[in-house]
Image 1 (cartoon, rainbow, N blue to C red):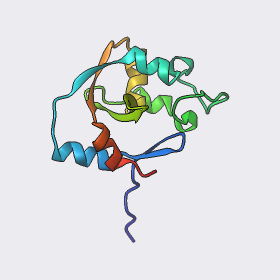
Image 2 (tube, rainbow, N blue to C red):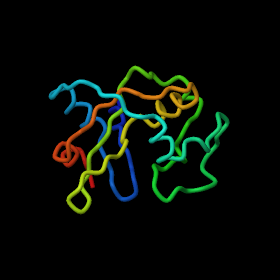
Image 3 (tube, rainbow, N blue to C red):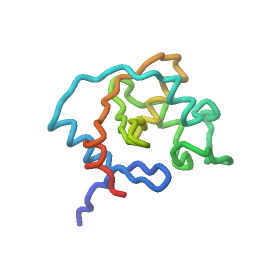
Length: 133
């Protein structure tokens, strides 16, 4: 019996983003990757609080992904040439960005002192098509 591969999802609060759909969208609508600042994402997701022996979150950031599934060992082997994916949401008519794929890459980049990582940014309308809820 063959099992279907797991769908890659990103949960942020009540929002659920389908990363497989985002990658398919990017394959169908290619664009150049642009640099995104590592320090901004480290601060947003409190990645500087994690250590390589991290074993689950004893704290919960007000804003940030569920880090209980974070694996620092995996992060130290993440491919830094693979662009991260940033979603664009709208709040009060203004755009706001959210890293939805690449937290492990950002962590590795932080540990290696990288200033930027390549990133694909989805438009607000593209982001709407990959949101499950």
